[in-house]
Image 1: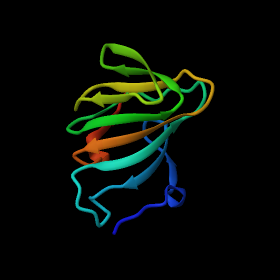
Image 2 (image 1 turned 60 degrees about the vertical axis):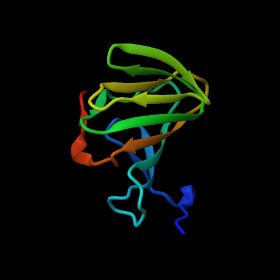
Image 3 (image 1 turned 135 degrees about the horizontal axis):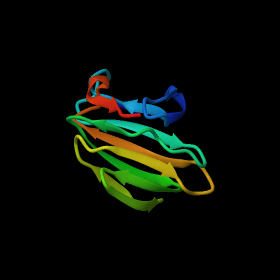
Image 4 (image 1 turned 30 degrees about the horizontal axis):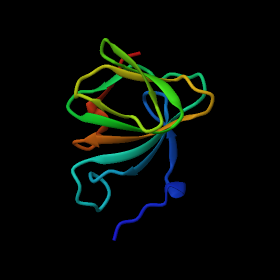
Length: 121
């Protein structure tokens, strides 16, 4: 059985400047899944750096707050309950446009690898 307590996950500042807790990544954890999972947070009024995952797709599941999602030339308002698909090699960033922290799950397939991510600013 594989159980993770999110409270025990290390909190880091990710390359895109979001606050991130990696929940699991099968490239380093003993779990047989084809994706990695992280919990991200963007503070009030902040925006992540433009970045892309060259070969992985990503899905954001908005758990709390409101934001403005930018994917390539598209922009949309997002909020709690929204699920956003980000194709591989797409330039992306998200802005917290609410009145509390913006919190979301990041599902990356295939699993996130540092060498796959490119920070553009």
